[in-house]
Image 1 (cartoon, one colour):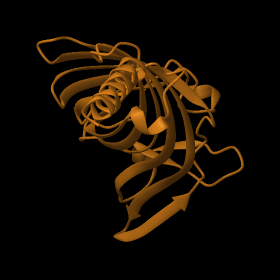
Image 2: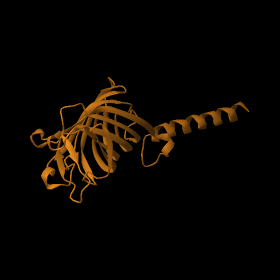
Image 3: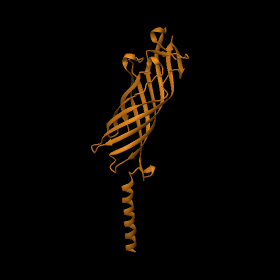
Image 4: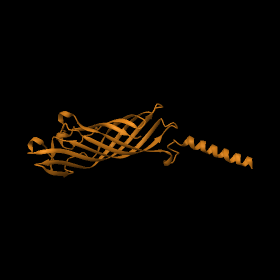
Length: 219
């Protein structure tokens, strides 16, 4: 009886050790054995180059939330690949408005009487691929490439005190992409992202790209 019990216990221990060895092997491990991670971003967005920018000097807000499925390549979780899906919102304060005309021309604020508080809101789906390096000191270095699809935009402003909201009249590029970097300690990060693709479709602003930075929590 004792021998049978000892044999069962030994087999259970060996099975546990075997599972532990393959737990972080992405080719042999089930999804629930990997890490599911949420991340939230807060920051500021800017248009580059500033010499050809329609952005005013007022604060531009950025918010994002992402889910990551992290595939670890070492039992110590020092090196991993994270596949993400998320939502970004960014608001740009502008020096004028894109009017709802067929050619979607940009009209500077000085050409519109009593124009105030023009701002462009952009809602996006984002798909990041992130390489993750984690050090024993809990410092983390995450390098990613992002593929972004703007799903809607709103040009909001006031004229003579009346509110206007022009939906999807701004000529936004339908597919954007660019690298990002997160450097942090434990679950607190600083991040930066640069779009190598143009934000706008109009020839006048075809070389204008987005640059953003801020803080990231989670991961």
